[in-house]
Image (tube, rainbow, N blue to C red; front, top):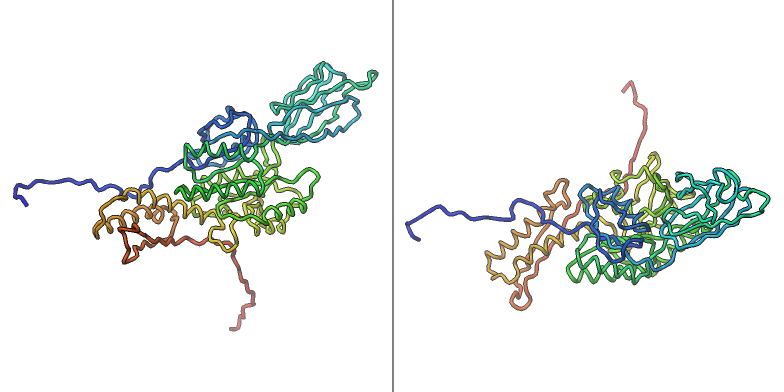
Length: 460
């Protein structure tokens, strides 16, 4: 070594504990009237009007209202190639106008057309509610041609004069019907998913329409494919709500039959539904709310925690703890209300995994998937390195630093971890094998309180 010395500086990078920047939180796919298979980047303050109307927009609106401020959703509308449905019109009152419904519904609505002032065409006035009568639109004149457009739903109710000697419309008469918006076929949904996955590698893929076991099998197969490609992802989707003439018991039996031949640890299916109170209040599945809550939920935190309680959701009539437990035990995510609370909560974050699986809840899968992403990002830096004892220790230190971002976060995402390099490996022929053990933080799912009472003895 030369005596002609100096002061030398070396940059040691990666020791600050900063987590590497990641991909957008979720990819959201579903039918709407916006341009199909176009990619949108949506945040909490985004304008959703370019997406038009549809199931996707309703659920995305639920999500961003609950999301954290910096959450990013990549949104890809799917082609709405399965027509929506319209119920028959129920007329209450004495008016003798005739009526027909036309058009293909774009979104779900509980429509009430209420006559404000009676008369004939071009005389009578009405107002329209899309939420079963909770809120009302502006006053409108029923025109000469009788066509009344139901907002931007894609549906019209067309009236015609009845008895020419009497008023066709009578004050306070109502015309009530239900719209179920257009949906996307499985092919169209998967096309939109592929479009989104070409752009991003999200933590969660949310399918914003009701699906069944055929869909879930396709989502599970895609999750397996992505895992093999080193892109771990969870699929979140939802069930349909009960039909107008369907009892809750019949609906539960339908869901139990759907679950019978399906299981997958990375598919989560929301069966919880209720009236979402507010503007245009509607009864719908709460999967959109769950997605928003997951964006602000720590990866190791249970979605059933009080932090994610909902005061703006009303459970359906005749919903019971027995129904909730039956569905939750079969792997569905459901809502419940604990005795003594005025709020509604998610029971937990169940997946459709078998009961023997470690990955039955969001908090386990999300924690492990995050660790996988950190480990892979670190290991890729060391591919094709010349491996001696010093390099082995360097790789281990790098991995420790990566996983410490989860251990040292506040609150912690894992309690601890172990990294082991098995001895005697044939590294030349088989590469380097590393074993990891993650020590998760337990979730308290039940609390048992044993209370005793006795009298004190003043003479003791």
